Image (tube, rainbow, N blue to C red; front, side, top):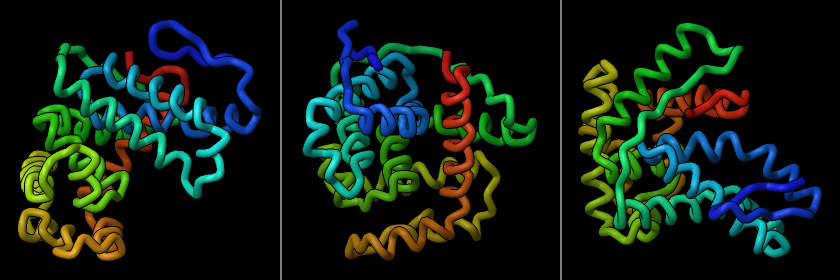
Length: 220
């Protein structure tokens, strides 16, 4: 099997277990990149780079407990680098998977439109925290910013999306502070995320987008 990577080069002759991993994880990885970053070409380039890097170190990374998490971090670093260097505007048009209902498509597009309106940093922090489940300190280290900046961006992003998506104020206590443990305890934050209505909406949108990417339609 052959996979195209950045610059038109290819990686081929991959071990079967890497091919299986690629087929299983690519749709969601691409969906996550499109949620993290509003510019389609940069998002897709970052995913290609992440898999190329993963392929290079597959003999070692394949033994990790969560190789996909390693690839997510590489992808996010590439997107963060793109944020600092250059910007291009692209219209992100999503064709739903054939199995998606009209209601699911409507809700997902509403969430995606709300995400698109966020500043890039707020969207990155929100997705990393609410979907990848990364604690704030880890996000700060990954994006090379202060933890206080992560907390501020998360609070603003949650408040804005909560209002735009019509979530009751009571479901966003303290503008999202309930999701942020003062100690950065992953267990505390993960438990809060599992009960968070905004995180649930983001997860549903991600699942819809993953199905669209996996169906061969996806982003154009």
